[in-house]
Image (tube, rainbow, N blue to C red; front, side, top):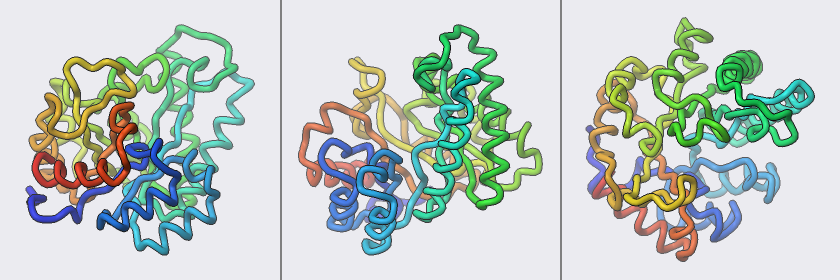
Length: 287
């Protein structure tokens, strides 16, 4: 396993971690100040500053990307499916312009939450079928752009509103069905927050192998967790054995960034430079 104790070469910042403290350009400037070499920006943050300005800011700062958040939200009623398809194609185009290595997919839950305005449904099996079909369609477009797609399984607490793919096994089953040749165009983004509890986590990481592991995200699970979305912990403040998970992904050949992604009202309330300094410290001591 790589030794992170003496530098933060392999730290990437998911820009949601400090989204309340500044816009994307300000976040990029702060990363440059702290010697952070990579980011994973969110589409709304890119839209707020404009794609051309975002591309220029990334280039001028000499940053790499570890991913692009996010595509997906595939579940929708018939009236909203064209919008879903077009939105995901734009995500691929934006990722290509920014030089991202993959688009991270949060696949969606029940249609009324994934695509507001869709007719209500309680049929999660149908939602999962739509996810399969939506990824298949997006993959055709992504192949033309040579932009890999990374399915992110989310904790089961998000099954209704954000993602009905909740385990690494489910995500890899989709990969095997749609990309049996393991072309490198379809894989998974594994976030310890979402998978740490799963008794099948370790064998599924081994099953994924190097060619399916496209992104690795870190934060921590607090006890108690006061808000399932916006109370993630800084690494080391919770109960996840982060190093054992990183050891597992590196054992099968993953050699990319450990991307820090913390949705937290508490951390959003602190100055950006303080948050980045602590991220670096914890990346060295805990990740």
